[in-house]
Image (cartoon, rainbow, N blue to C red; front, side, top):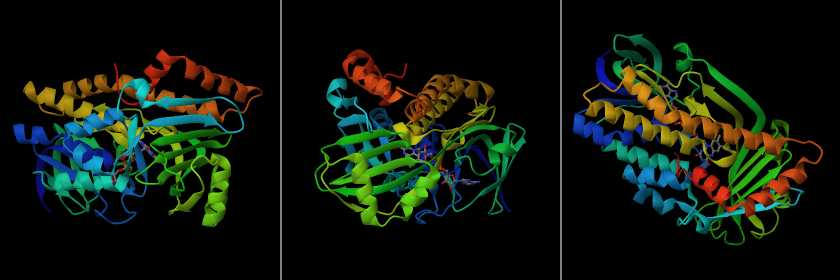
Length: 398
Ligand SMILES: Cc1cc2nc3c(=O)[nH]c(=O)nc-3n(C[C@H](O)[C@H](O)[C@H](O)COP(=O)(O)OP(=O)(O)OC[C@H]3O[C@@H](n4cnc5c(N)ncnc54)[C@H](O)[C@@H]3O)c2cc1C
């Protein structure tokens, strides 16, 4: 059993925890910060690590700038498929809207990246950094102590950390053990994800289609492949999972139409239950909560990781400001600064994604006509459209 003291302990080396560790690289060098990352799953263990499974993530254009500042964009760009246009429509009703990168004046609206590749690039960068890396190791308990927390690891190691960052995805029970409650709303929907091969080129188009059962999105990947996210009630997802590949592709084709030509092949299908959750405390002295542990949202607009990444950047900026002023990273002032930077963006994106899910899920008389009209009007209201697209792209936050 060994006792180690660190300035910052990051619990969870998934998408969010690993991004934070990489973001701290300049501070580790400049201030000789001691940073530990504790990750429960063995790296590369297929299916073991929730962050790096077979999903792909829509990365907002603004997140590209963050990856550039982390020094990993040139690597990520080799597998990042650009989104040039997005078509939003609703099944069985008129009214659709078209969002284009030309309207915003950027080379793309965003990118689609395989999560496993993102994980590979982040972990490769971590392997060259002077951090205290515990993997596979699970944080079993977290206890408040003088000026920080004590963490007991499954390996027997005891860590004393001035600042602990909970980036464990929110399922470990550690947050609850600290008395932090989580508000949760179950959408009673599951998301089916799979990669689809199409007959025609997608030319960087993404398609978002709302149906009375839930939303469907097809996002461009490299070559003639697209990432499908199909949200439906659980019992319908079960039946859809039971279909043969051919029957599944036929059903999907019926829902999405023929503009991408015949859907030719489908990869392994995976299912995720969907809920919105939010920790009642996002930080307290010596503790910050990030990523899914802090907030999980419906994947309808592909904003969850993008929002979390902005949290990563805000936390590292608050830590940098504290160190520049001669304060320790976990002090109350630092955590208050972090919360102030975060609050508005987090509230807005959580509210907007929930409103979108509820609006398109409503089945009231005349509502689909009203939604169609709204989509059509949105097409015409150019300044509003541009402002909303820029926000979704992670640009123009303030
Ligand atoms: C179907 C679906 C599609 C999505 N698509 C998009 C998208 O297109 N764009 C987007 O921006 N977002 C998207 N999201 C959201 C995105 O996937 C999440 O925001 C992201 O995965 C959160 O990562 P995380 O690191 O916070 O949590 P996780 O991915 O859960 O990682 C937590 C890590 O902590 C480790 N851990 C847990 N407990 C412990 C412990 N006690 N000790 C040590 N380690 C521990 C786990 O092993 C894991 O590696 C999507 C989500 C879903 C469900």
